[in-house]
Length: 307
Image (tube, rainbow, N blue to C red; front, top):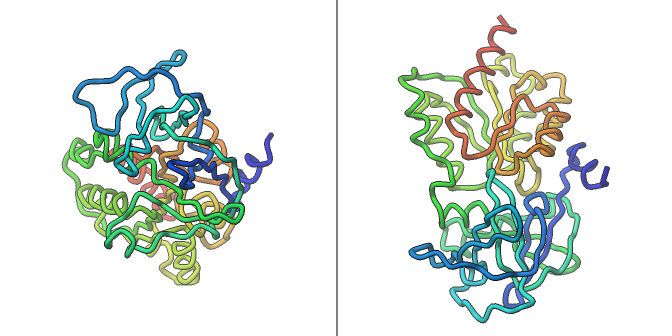
């Protein structure tokens, strides 16, 4: 087993960042999202597609959509070069190729060393960089690939109307703790849970903030009411969801909180890691309807055990 797998499984709050360049600028992607790196090949254009979509590419048995990342980030196409590379990614159960100019290498760093960009950079709105990291003495912008894909193909993201298909629901006052660093996804998740009757959601920007809150109420007599269930992303600055899950499940006062890991990274390998850390359930981010169903089941089970 690779050292990185051991680190991630033990929830030590570390991440591997693959660095790449576009027009000489350094960017990064979580290695957990990367399937492979390939030399750029011939792409078949698709009429009426998004401007950032080059077309489709089929190197072997999988048909891949190719996104021209230089154009998406800068509005400049430049000349496609024979030395360009495709980063083949897998997240949200989807495989996508991103064109980049060079791949520099991989750095292992702590989530504590990744900072959220100041919102003054993006006029108060959430930008395309999910974090800024110092790798090998260089500042690297870690891109929010889920946001990029959601902008190009909104149907691949969370569909709030999935909740409506669950039928009529009653209002529930269970306090739900949500750890999610994306402003956009936080809003979509909260809106979905509100539709599902979960009107009492307290959200935090990362695992560290959620952990500090839980530590502050852990000795309260009504702790179970103040933290009925925890939903956490995996990728978050300062403290990731795996580390948060590990800390909660190892704490005698908190271990009974149902924990759902809700992330774009859920695959077979990640599922094994989350299970070892004690997560009660793990779901891929588009599955918002299934998230509500699982919340119902876990809260009901906890109440029965405590009853």
